[in-house]
Length: 141
Image 1: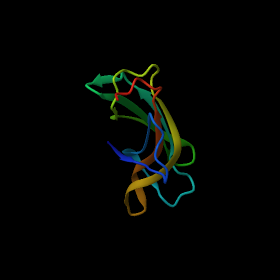
Image 2: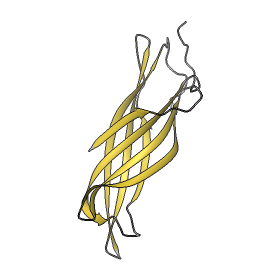
Image 3: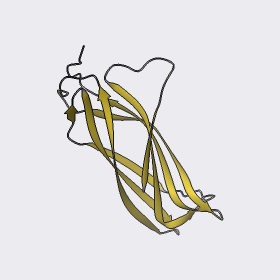
């Protein structure tokens, strides 16, 4: 349904060839679930890096996130939905492509109900804190 990106910072400057960001995925589920229940949706996210492009001195890296949401349905059944979201990150001031594809590391994940009406959630929000790291290409001077 939607993906939102925002930078994440610490008190120290980030390392070279590293991007820290928060990826927020908001997805609508087919079956509503009770927000007060002890049984909440199980959510996983996997990332796949596309082909990196160098345009002038900027590296553009497409990333596809596959979000799997298993929503409880009574005591015996569950409903599984798979969502695919794509986004692009950029690294500036490079003169060449990385020697190895970027790596994506999940630092933390927070899952919250969304689209709540009368105690039932009709969606799920996944907040992923990510670090994207490049194997150093040649940087421009």
